[in-house]
Image 1 (tube, rainbow, N blue to C red):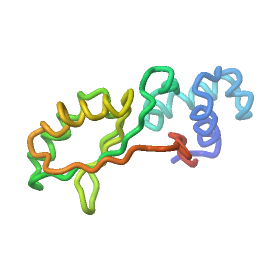
Image 2 (cartoon, helix red, strand yellow):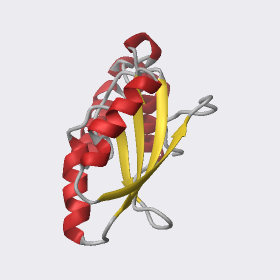
Image 3 (tube, one colour):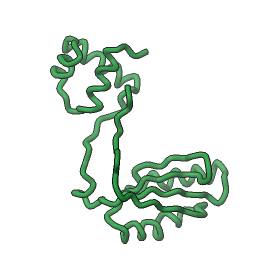
Image 4 (cartoon, rainbow, N blue to C red):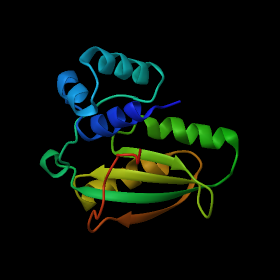
Length: 151
C-alpha cells in the first residue's frame, strides 16, 4: 500500500526523472536515506518501471504521428499472438494496444513523412499474416501528450 510520502515521490519523479535524491528528499520532507530507501522499494515493487528522456520527434526526423486501426481476418489467440510478436520489433510502432470494439489493434506510429508512412504500411504492416484491414488517422495537432499518471 502506498503512503502519502510514496505518492509525493512518485509525483515528483514522473515530472522530473533526473531529480537528485537530495532535492527529492528535501521536497518530500524526508531524510535523504529514508527517501532513497522508499525510492528503492518503489522500484523493487514495480511501481517505477524505468526512466527515460522525452525526445523531440521533429528533431529526430519522426514528425508525422499516425494512429492505425488494424482489423485481423480471424480472431484466434494464435493470430493475435503472431501479430503482437511481429509489431514488437518494428521501431516505427511506439504503442500497440489490443482493443475491444470494431477492430482488433490500435497502433501509434511515428515516421518521417507521408511517403515513409506509405512505405511502412505497404511494405511492412499489411504483410503481417492475418491483417485484413487498416484505417489510418494522421495527427494534425498534438493537443495533449503525456505519460504522467494522476497520483
